[in-house]
Each structure stands twice: as structure tokens, then as C-alpha cells.
Length: 311
Image 1 (tube, rainbow, N blue to C red):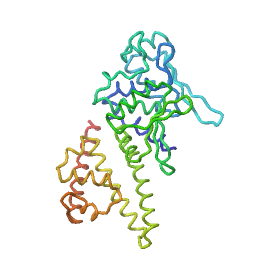
Image 2 (image 1 turned 60 degrees about the vertical axis):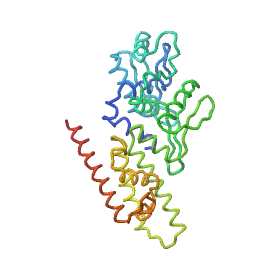
Image 3 (image 1 turned 30 degrees about the horizontal axis):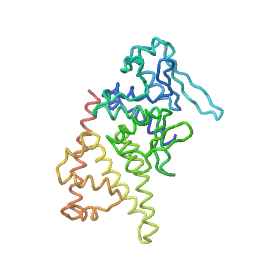
Image 4 (image 1 turned 180 degrees about the vertical axis):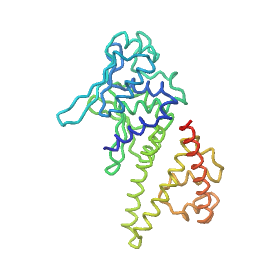
């Protein structure tokens, strides 16, 4: 299973994230699918969960079902492609109307009035599920969105720049591409899109690479110490990412906020190095104490999330 497939699976299975903003996520899926207009509404994807989410979103939000077709096609390389279509013209018109597209207007533009700040993450998540791709982090860092419609690419670039980092742009054959190659930007994007575990996986790969480079430069560095450093840093970063996704680092005390940001920016720093880098330097034990407080706060968030899922 590829890294990109795991990311899309995580988003599709992130039920609390999906359920909070169902309409916005569906809007992104539809708008960046293969076709979205009176003549055709369709999605082509290699991901079965994405195809099912696309079909279910139309059915649930518009009240259709009978004219939605989901079929699997085997390619020459034996890999599956899933095709979802809305077959009835009247149903396609109903879908367009439900998502604010009026007759005579170009439906392949983002209606920014329908994507306020609180809906942006879900909308971009839907866009990524429909047209996004990610490279294997072991080979390189790259995430991209591809669309054949330049105005739609312009709108998407504006949203990404507003809520994350401005993407780079290029053209490949008939596709307009928006992409990131910086690992920090990709980590932020994945967390924002509802895939924090995949973001952490990417960070883990990066940390291991960086520490391997350190080993090559420092012959007295022991493998056991590397493993311990990696595991501790990953645990701390996972806690901070959870806090970030659940209300923001701003919910922490000032002294914890600074340390949390510093740890995210410097995943391979030792506790002593982190302490020296703070505005008001503290000892290794002081850093350890603050990280424990962050961990306790994250643990409480996990307990709260578990209670909500059980309710």
C-alpha cells in the first residue's frame, strides 16, 4: 500500500473530521473530480474508499441514489480504477443546484462564499482526495494537486496560500499542478487535511534520515541512542500535533507554546539543545518537565476524544 493510499485512507476513515464538515468536503470532492457540470458529473480514482465517499456524499447531501453508478474497471496492469457517475441529467442539475451552481455560470470555479475559514480544511481535504498525489517520502518529498482547469487551479492556489503556504506551480501535459516539496509544508498540509498520523509518519522518515546523516558525520554516535532520540522526539511531536489539531498550540501556556513550536521546527534537537535555544534558556531537566506537561495535556485530549466517540 503506497504512502498516498494510506493518507487518503486515513482521511476517509477520520470520521469526526468528515462528519463535522460534510458539505464542504463533498464540495471539494465534486469540484475537483473528473467532471462537474450539466453534461457530466464523475470521479475516477484508484482508491475504493474515495469512490465510496464520493457516491455516499452525493446520495446523503442531495438525496439521490438511483442514478449514481460506482463501478470497478481493471487496467492492463491489473490495478483497479473506480468510476463514479451521476447518470441522470435532472439529478446532475439537482447536484449542481445543491452546491450553489446557477445556470449559465462556470461550475468549475470555487465559490469562496461557500468556503469560509471554518470550512476550508474540509474543502481542501475533498480536493486532495479527488486530485491529490504524494510521493514516497523514502524517495523524496512532494505533494501535488492536478486539474485541467486553470481558473480552478488559480482558486485552489489562493486557498492554499491563505491557510497554509503558497504552493509552487507548473504545467504537465494538460494538467495545471500545484505542489509542495518542502517536508515542513507537506507535514502541515497533511495535518490540516485530517491525516495527522500520515504527517507523523513523514516526520519520522525525515528524522531517521537526518539522524543517519549525523551518524555518518559522527562516528561515536551509537545506534541505541539514535533510536531512543527518534522515539522520544516522535512521541513529543505526536502530542504537539494532536494539540495543534484540537484547538491550536495557542491553548498552551506561553512557556509551553515556545517549546512546542521549537520542537516541531527542530525534531532532531536534544533536550539540552532545546533548552539552550529557548528565549530564556533552561536546563535539560527543565525541558523534560515542560514536555511532560505537554504530554499530559495531550493525554487528556485523547481521553476527551475517546469519550466523544463513545457518546
